Length: 49
Image (cartoon, rainbow, N blue to C red):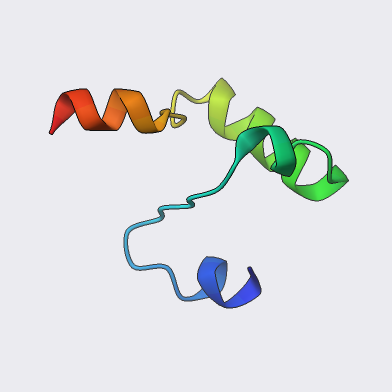
């Protein structure tokens, strides 16, 4: 995960939110991303495409 976050070109994080929220760091990150409107489900992305 470290490489994915430090070398991301488009600030995109892909993962299972129910799993990520169980970890303290990723749970806080997910809460922040949702708070600023940056969270989308796979279904939402598929509809936009």
